[in-house]
Image (cartoon, protein in one colour):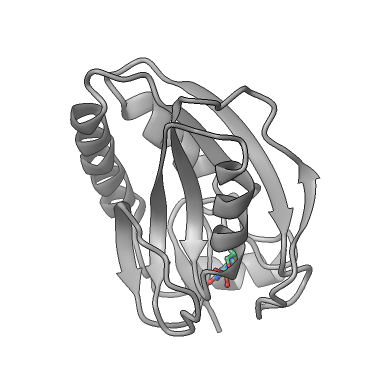
Length: 177
Ligand code: 5GP
């Protein structure tokens, strides 16, 4: 609790107001790009939940949703490269347009493996929507079709992002020192 109170005294990196207005812009762009289609949005659990819900609620087109759960970080702050799945996509994506929704792309390892996994299921198309594009440690080439914010470095928490399961509930995004 004490740790969380300290976090609340920290400088906010991205405020909830800034997040909301950017999420609204992303939703408008997606709604316009998919005006004639009904995409399947696949959220990568758990960090994406706040972003995912806000994004889907702001869309003005019909969509279906599903989730995939991949773990690469455990309780640390550096990607280990190998990921494990504890929930797979259940909806049939064959010949359907898919948008993968991710919280943060750091090295790009997690996203690239998930893209490959979903590609094998034969979707019509795959686009990527990420709340935060963290370029500092990018080792894989990933094209982010929709990107909320560019952040150079730092381990971020809040708005669904955790460190060892803490801080997800914070409404703003902070840098963990
Ligand atoms: P990557 O495989 O791109 O290195 O890592 C992607 C995943 O690591 C993200 O989905 C996210 O769960 C986690 N991650 C990367 N950077 C951060 C960060 O700054 N804060 C938090 N909370 N998670 C991060």
